[in-house]
Image (tube, rainbow, N blue to C red; front, side, top):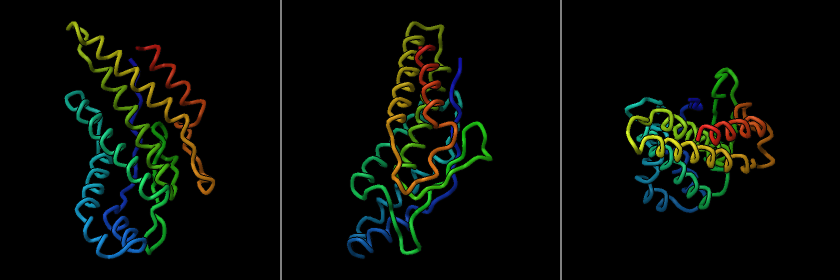
Length: 189
């Protein structure tokens, strides 16, 4: 069975960046009041950045990436697509899943959101491949996970970056590639 590999990313200090953004956009009091929440976002991103695909932790990786994806959705709702700090905008760098030398950097939460969604699809597809086919529920769970991975890829196909994000996605997240990955996931389901 085929599964997608995880994309890798560079470290970003979201604690400092979110604190500065809220301080400059709202007030120092508001920023200080939310410092623990910013620390949680930063810690969650770091856990996602270092996540791996391993048989005994496949479901934990799915839950971790899903939690960070939901958190990014909330951040985008509150702050829009860019988080600026006094040193400039926060840049997110992600590498191609198959060709790690190829990478893109963008100053756009939507880009981060999309790359995390790709990794969620990868974790879901991996989870499907490690389901025990010897018990009665194993094939059903595998089918569901492959369908969920295909759904994540379909959602990813609809994500558009802002006009400022001229670099676009790496090849693993191009429109044609996503269509192929989605078809493979559904065929395996």
